[in-house]
Amino acid sequence: MRDEIKAAIEAVLFMRGERVSADELVEILDIPLLELRDIMRELIAEYFHPGRGLQIVPVDDGYLMCTKGEYSDILARAVRPVRRRLSQAALETLALIAYRQPITRAEIEKIRGVRVDRVITSLLERGLIEEVGVKEAVGKPILYGTTAEFLRLYGLTSLKDLPPLEE
View 1 (cartoon, rainbow, N blue to C red):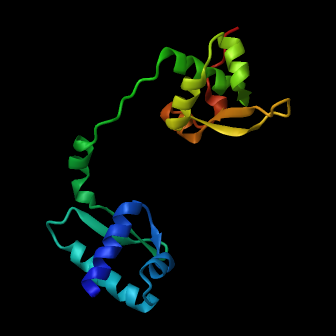
View 2 (view 1 turned 120 degrees about the vertical axis):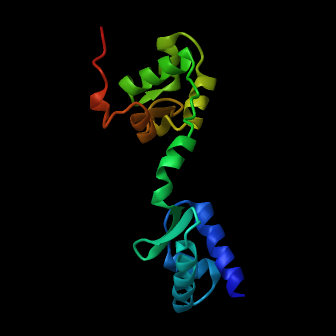
View 3 (view 1 turned 180 degrees about the horizontal axis):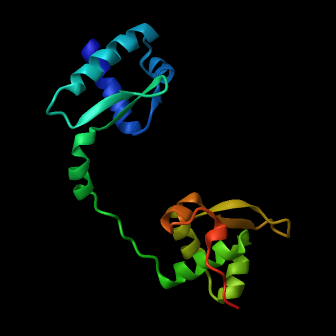
């Protein structure tokens, strides 16, 4: 039974990829907190042995499964950045949203002179824009704005860092 609980903990920590609180693990596994803490000590010790690339780290009354620091050089070489280029239409639409946000689809289409349904959908799927509200107008059109992912991707700390718009 204990090995099954350990396997379940590993699965939860791996799937989440972020800290999972002890209270949440207790609830998920339906075991007492003292038993969880005992099992976690064993698991942490098992992962501590040399030859393991992963470790379980206690963090803020929770646990995180992550890679060991000594493999950072290898991991840096293994990471391949995903380079999915944006089309010219997507870049133009994204620029309009960034500079004029919040903005509606109809306002974008009026400026660009073409439909932008698929472009908006693509930018939403990539997490570069998001719905930020509705405009107080007939039909209550959705307003769009950029996301924190947009800022991160373009190396900006805020929208104030956008280059000045040429007239």
